[in-house]
Image (cartoon, rainbow, N blue to C red; front, side):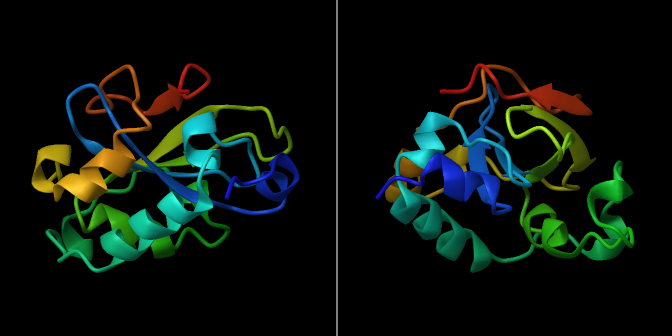
Length: 148
């Protein structure tokens, strides 16, 4: 079932992608428009969330160096940490007042990164439907407008 645009505006979706180097990326939409590949299947998004929430942690909070602590009102990285600990680069959408904005700010890089090659084939097949056409390794901001 697709995620309707109106629902996307009213919810902060965690969504996932693979960058050009095979790194796993976690992004939070904060009421923004999702790429078509993500919005195409709420079931696939739920499958990824369920699988990733059960992955073992690769890092401790003490090892994580936050780049953008304005991601949450009190500077607590909360759910971002769940993904960063598991090896994801984590980004938050910046312009909360513009649903069409596709610019995201790095929250933190993982001390130990997870690659798409580390995933089972069924999960890799879902996440690779959303590909970033660039590497996130050195980025602090990214624009997802070119992501299908």
